[in-house]
Image (tube, rainbow, N blue to C red; front, side):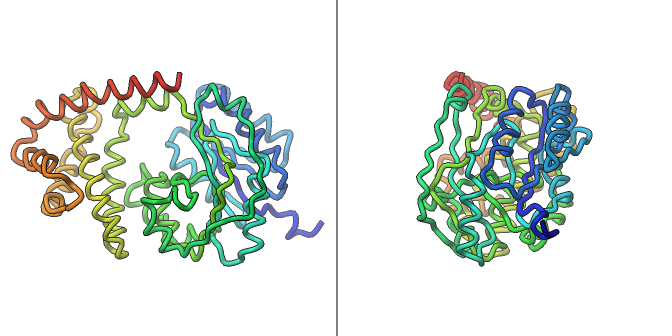
Length: 358
């Protein structure tokens, strides 16, 4: 076997954190691939359960499986560590509780062989409840139909990805490794390290910097919807502040690169993230003690974009009144509108969402 042939064509990166219940299914779905030129990097992110032992067991049995162990630094940092250690020409990401179809990489690399200029290739993925994922039957149609888009066109249509069989998250795709270098992602990590490599930030940046993107409609990825992960939507735990920071970075990215429709959309999302972060930090004592230092950042971003917020055509008049009220008196806003929405309405929505997936 030649040295070139022995090198992995794709590096699959799986950040692992306390996933002992799901990890076997995830890893086994990679090992069962009909395509064999892969390496699997399992980045254990400070798990406190048996996850690290499970990773090592697979590594001992299969030379293509590598394990990296680190202190808990978060999902994004784990992905970045895996990316640094990757040897493959292409990169793919899988979440530690998800599974892929046996022919996922065979399908994607067949498409790459037919279209040598593509740099991102993806297929369809679906979110599925825990009770349905085990009995899921893969439908292998072997369809040859696909969509090819210029990278900038794909980025400009990011609000309509479903029309092109494109899933927004990072999973369900392979990326030419050089796109990450071209996208200058290390600079984004320095600017906002906690949310680096999160889907909402990285997907549009990678699409923008790619030459061509190709997508097929075949479902090859199952994203497990867990009740305990959904419940985190109702807790702060730093997520809302990270969302606010990432929204602001995307606002700048869209504006600098001429995606004005996306910029206007992101302005609206940023406003929601800023107010949500402010409310939880300012009016929840335990959270305030931990995150009070970023309140000034939130206010500064809000003031910087205030004029564009109130002039944004996507934001309705009723919401603009809320925006102006917050500027006049954040305390009054928080004790009235903020309390009703975030401490009354949102928990009810989360409860109903959790009930759906039990």
